[in-house]
Image 1 (tube, rainbow, N blue to C red):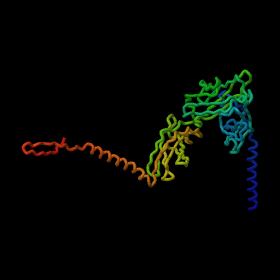
Image 2 (cartoon, rainbow, N blue to C red):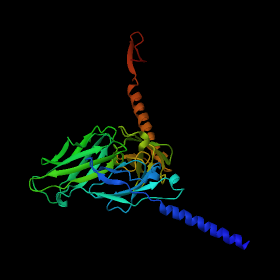
Image 3 (cartoon, helix red, strand yellow):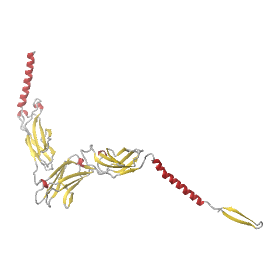
Image 4 (cartoon, one colour):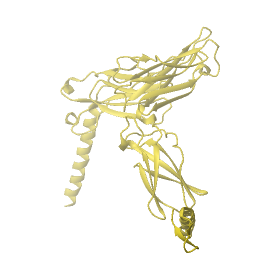
Amino acid sequence: MAFMEVDTRFLGLFLLCSIIGYSLEIKVNPPQDFEIMDPGLLGYLYLQWKPPVVIEKFKECTLEYELKYRNVDSDIWKTIITRNLIYKDGFDLNKGVEGKIRTHLSEQCTNGSEVHSSWMEASYRISDAGSLETRIQDMKCVYYNWQYLVCSWKPGKVVHSDTNYTMFFWYEGLDHALQCTNYLQDNEKNVGCKLSNLESSDYKDFFICVNGSSKMEPIQASYTIFQLQNIVKPLTPEFLHITVENSIEIRVKWSTPGGPIPPRCYTYEVVVREDDFSWESATEKNDMKLKKRTNESEELCFFVRSKVNIYCADDGIWSEWSEEECWEGYTGPDSKVIFLVPICLFFVFLLLLLCLIVEKEEPEPRLNFHMDLNKEVYSYEETLC
């Protein structure tokens, strides 16, 4: 029994060493000519390579490639496993880009063991023409009501008076990068751009480059990348309507902002001001039922704003606040008395007025005298007019 146990241990060790030895004998070459290419799409780069030189016995094997890439200042590598010879993605060209790739052999060629080549590396960086101080500042873009895009910027910190900027943009679906045709200007200098009719541009990376020109020095380009649905600023909700349902419950309703944004894509923030106290509340619907803090509230005011919700975008920009709508009233225990007093006074006044009219129109009696010559007696009778 002891002999068999020792033999089993040796057999397992032998098999393990055989597998390790077999794995060490299997080698695969890395991909060839790995490069990061810029097709001029403002940050949408191609990472491409050629197949490795394959040993004869592995020519029937399926090759896979492990690709890793990042901007040079990022701590996180993106990892892709692919059988293709090219991969495309967007990058921030304000920073350098680096990638690395290696070959994987499929399991049917290696008896289930993991075999891969050494890494091949590549990098890419745009030319640093111009100093950093010449690059635009405070670049901001807002997609108003999911209809038109407005981007604005400020000139660089150190620029000459003849410096002017131009903006280019690209997203998947366009054949090439386009220049803005509708600039916003200040003192005849371009400080922004308005873009309309951006068909099929949602839920895609949107690339922008703003560069400049000057006879005195080169201007450094600035790159921006975002998705339009994440920078939408909706219209302001309007037509607030307040309904008092009972002594403490109030319903507030407002209109859904107009435009192409589906009603299901809105979220709302409502601010309630009750006398000198205020609080906020959120809802996905365009109405809300609220309870007053006390029955003696003399004033309730509301205003609301809208934003694209998490079901339609990763982020968004709040709309402007609506105009404040208020309800004034008092529903405390003495409110009925306060309400009845003016009504009673009105009816008393009406009754007095009616009595005066009747008294004025009542006819007065007229005396008619008749003389009876025979009897020489005077008499009178009442006659009415």
